[in-house]
Length: 271
Image (cartoon, rainbow, N blue to C red; front, side, top):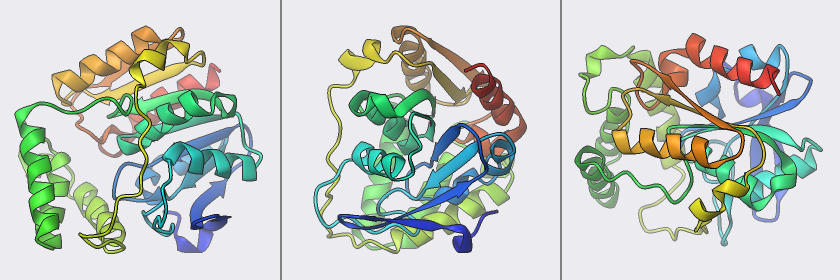
């Protein structure tokens, strides 16, 4: 796994943003899920870097990147990085929060995006509405509000098996890694700090204008509303398709990396 020694830093107007930049060829940007960092992609970085230039940032407020002290948008941070690296147009690959960053960026900065891959996400307009996720989000808020980091981490890694599997149904190394990364990111924050993130809204009506190829990869154990929204995304863009990794939950790139990497590489090679 790539470590901190490999990181580079973009001096943004609101603190340094960390990123990994490895390999050569057409640029592929890996956008991690919430509360973790670029190491989330440890199963993908070497597989992709054999053929592509892989850029894996730590999103602002995560990993080694600075916390926000002023209003910001994820898409604008990514656009600044891509311009700094002269790496656009790039293929954006994002999971969960990272998937939202990918769709935000193709909507707000289309000239910087060659193609989009989303996983466990659609656009920023999507919200989980199933009772299991609603209860889990309430547990996040309760534990964070109480300063109970261990309790919050316990809730955070419940997403790995998901609603329909026992914790021992997944490789214990997956929640261990996620927990380690999440502890690092959450420890950078306090419960009472202001949320400076400015969200991109009204995205669904703009989806049909996304004229680059879009691939939606999702675990088959995701809730039905997420899978339906992913199908809608693939259907409403001019060049989209959806793939399901059966038997995987929210993190198919970690649970079934060979399957995920094969789908991703097939998509990239066809561009």
